[in-house]
Each structure stands twice: as structure tokens, then as C-alpha cells.
Image (cartoon, rainbow over all chains, first blue to last red; front, side, top):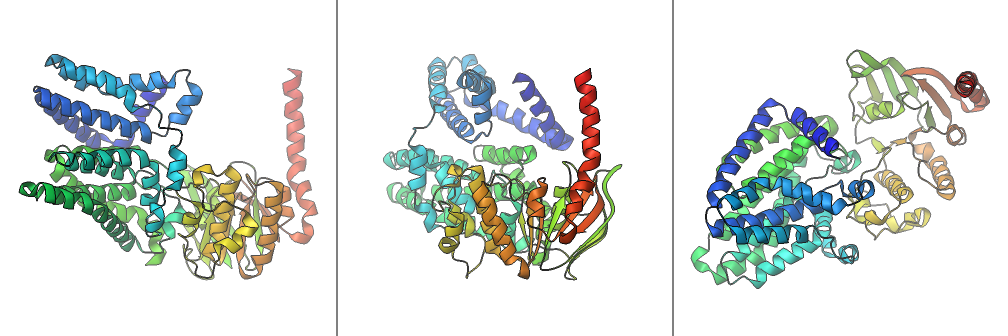
Length: 312
Length: 228
């Protein structure tokens, strides 16, 4: 398994190419510097731990190699836990270095909980989830995504609404929901599904973006209105957050079709989508996302043009 | 009529799979593409479905470039979003006149269940139903019988025979019997080359043509392996 991971990392580095690899290293270095500075205070360390737990929970629910690991490994959960702890090395090193031991304990407690199996009724609940039927027939990512992330979405949003009297609650649940929604655009559909839109490349992309913007704006309306009602002094925060998330989601859609290969997952696509996810926390990265988004628009058009050219 | 005119295609620059490959497929008939594993069957279908672009040569369908408007394509492996229902998947393919429930009496799928709960055969049937729903003049079916049980295979065979008059249907299969029972023409390819094309009335010769040399080769190899 260790050998497989090393091979995967090597293949990903090769697929990314040198410029993207340098970009990745620059982003990582900036992130580490920021993490070091944030974890100096107990509040910063606490937020870092909670966000990391949310990110790990999301990563664990999304990863496709779980059935493989379940079959091949005797103790898959221990393996996953070791991987996540390794991934979080910078965080726990920073926390230890700054002497934030309470936060370290929280992290050691929450990470195993975050990767526990979801309740067995999850699939039945997802099946019963009728909201998908209210969505337009073309919103396939939303239909699949809402059912796939049913439980985390319900937990995050219930917690957000329950704690809505705190100014930070609803924006935080909005960010976490936004992250999960970015995951909707992770999988590449088959060629027949792509062609079922019967649209030329540019109209196809715009249809996808507009459809997503409509649905996301609509579901963001109740938390936004409640937030403005409860915290009028920060009225601008939620609209700004929704707008930011819309930009990041549009970027995720463009990443998907830039690296679109029917039924295949692209490591480069995964990296750039993750970069978008990080940008939700690091405003420093936002201009980069905007620039990459413009570049990816044209690259996405070129990539899907041979597949949709005849609908022009 | 589908015309494949001297196409060349290579996965790696110096190893062409197809080199000047030509074939014509008449309308209103079922054409089978047969060949051993790695012969280039799926690659040929992907080129016809304009998913892959030939390096040289031309393909035309009724005088036009091949396009998604004309082709319904069943891929070997059908990727579905696990968390959508069969009905939601079908509804992606526009066709006002197609009654999902009426057609489903033939296919027998739990259309309102999530695709996650479908078996391999059920997924295959759903993909075939989507091809029928999209109602295109050309149907390209890559290994449509894979994963289907006996009853479903027979149903698919009857269905294809019933609709062939208005379509050009192209099928690959590594099981020769499934092609000889269904097709009007069988085209046998080997390492990207068309070895022969045979019409229905001469299907008896196919087995002889394909398997005689293979059987000799296998006997020879097995003899050596088991003796050593």
C-alpha cells in the first residue's frame, strides 16, 4: 500500500508538470507559513483543528479507494487514520510547537470520530431524499451530490441554523456547505451524458454554470435572510460569501471540463479543485483562482470541443 | 450508410493500430465487429463515435461527418452517478414520445431506485434503454451482451432485430455466437486490419476461418507447456 501511494504521488507529479508542481509547492509554503502564524493563538489553533476535521471528514467520505482498502487491508480504518495523521503533520507540529495541548487533544479525539462509518440507514435515507426530483432534469451533479452528502449537509446546516444567534455560525456552515458542493463536480460523466445536453461547447459550459448559480443562490437564500435578520450590522457578509462560493464553484465546473475525460478521474483536476477549496480560506489565493478560472474557461472549451463540435 | 475511408490511428506514435483501414456499413442492417482481445474493436467504435480522432482518413455517416446528433453510443463500461435514479438518468436523453414506464415492462428495471443499487446487468440494460430513448439513426453498441442474463440477451436480440430497419446498428462482441445469431454482416478484424467481411448466408465459414489456425496454435502451445 505504501508503495502504491508513492507511485500515485509520483504519477500525479508527472501529470501536473513542472509549472503546476511549482505552483503547488508555492501554495503549500504559503499555507504552512499561514498555519504557523494562525496556530500561535488558542482561537486560531481551535479553528484550524475544526476546519481540518471537516476537511478530513469530507475527504474520507469522498475517496474512491475505500472499497479497495476494505478488501485488501486487514485494518483499513487504522490505515486511513495513519494516512490522515500523516497528512496533518504540519498542523500537529505547529500546535505542539506553540504549546496548544488542549487543541491537540481535541484533534486526536475528533479525527477518528470524523472517519467513523456513517449510520447504516444512510443509503435508505438518501434514497428517500425527494428533493432531487424538484431539481431540473439536467442538474445531475446536484441530484447525485445532495444524496451523496445528505448526512454531512443536514448536520452542518442544522448546526448552522441552531447556532444562528452567533454571527460566525451561518457563514461557517455556508463555507462547509460550499466545500461539499465543490465535490459535486468531482466525477466525470460519460460521453452519452455529456452529449445529452445537445449543446455546442460554449453554450454547454454556460448552461452548466447558470444552472448551478440558480440552484446555489436559491438554497443560500434562507440562511442569508436569517443571517441578515439576526445580524444586520454584518448584512454584507453572507451575500459576499455566497458570491465568493459561486466564483469558486464556477471555477470547479471549469476545472472539471478542462480535464474532462469521459469516465476518468484526472489527478491534475483534483489538484486544481483542491486549490479552489483552499482559496475559500485563503483570500490571498483568490486572484489566482480568478486568473486560473479565465484560463480554464478557454481550455475547457478546447477540451470538450471535439466531443460537442457537431451541436454548433 | 457509414463509410470508413482509409483511417489511421495510433495510441503511440510509432505503433499504428489502424493503418489505412476502410469499411462500409449499409443502412437498415446489423453489423457485427468481431476480433480477439486487443484487435481494435473498441478503438474503432470510439473513432466512429467521434470520441477519438483518426490521425488520417475520413468517416462519413450518410455523407456527413459523424456526430453525436446521429449516434447513440453504448460504451463497454457504463459510468453512472451512483446517487441518481434510473429514471433521472433516462430523462437526460430528450425524447417526448418515449414512455419510460411502458418500455420498462420490457427491461424490468427498478427505475425509481438509486443506480448505486443496480447490478452490472441492470446498469447495462439502463444504458441500452437510454440508447433506445435517444432515438438516433446510428446505434453503436460495444459488447452489449456483457453482463446480461439469458432472458435479457434474448430480449435485446429481439429488440435489435425489430428496430434495425430504420437504423444502422454496429455491435462488437467477443462471443461469436451472439453475433452470428443477430447480425446481417460480420467484419472480423485482427490487430487493426480487416481480415474478412462475411454476409449472413456465409456465416458457416466464419468459424472455420477464425478458429482453425487458432486451434492449431493453442494445441501446439499447450503441448509444449504441459510437456515441460
